[in-house]
Length: 213
Image (cartoon, rainbow, N blue to C red; front, top):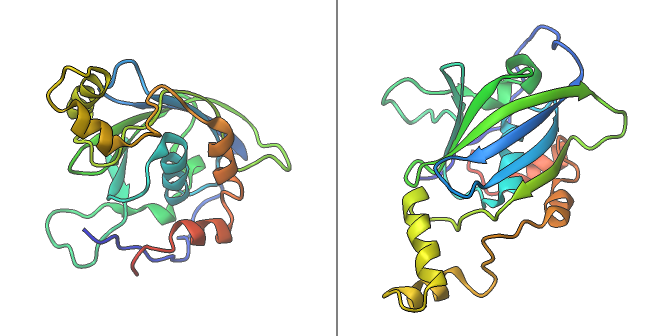
């Protein structure tokens, strides 16, 4: 399904609660051992910008649709051509410090087919530091599953088959994931390199260059 995205002016809003940075614990649901990331993000980022941060820090390629749910409200990329059901609110129009505070929970759903659900918890807040990056991955465990691997259950089966030469699909799946597949590794240096410039117009335009308008 083609992505629909258009950079629009932010809606009028009241001043944010505080210029704090949020410390987020992001955990991919229904996977054991857990795949998780600990991220510091500026409170003035929009949900659209958080989407990009999550794609980078977890390891996805932004190849599918996504959606946030916070306190029962859905935020995402409304499709003007979609007339089935209530559309989500436009994620471009909401900043983190309007919706989240210490203790808040959000769910980030990526790939409606595979159904990758990310539990996102604001574990703490800290004062914003001048010159600090808008987004930084502080820690994490285990690599992101490959795109189109079928969701949590099928990913478990994939890991078993790749690790066991006696499995029927071992060779096929080993070739599919490729020689660089390392499910237990997280390269924080690489992740933070890609996060540089987060929150800037240029960074966002680079991330959204393949979005359709």
